[in-house]
Image 1: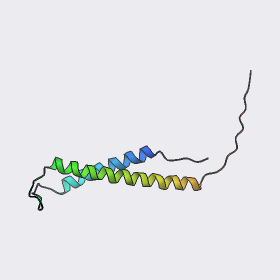
Image 2: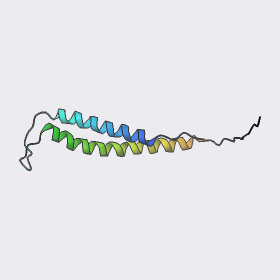
Image 3: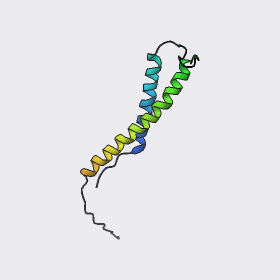
Image 4: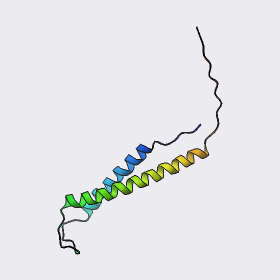
Length: 90
């Protein structure tokens, strides 16, 4: 008998943390400036979109790894339980 983690919750939290980090990085960079490589100026919304895509992917991966680690830890604490099923007919 063991308790397995809910992978969907870990993946969702990881994705939300990725969006939060993207939001912080977007406003931490400050003003708009042209790209040194292309000379194109990107708005804050565009920068947030690019960073959010990357942050979500990394957050999903990290959330999945954390869920797998918790699953592995729960396997170590698993124990065998014996159950008897009884039917009572009135």
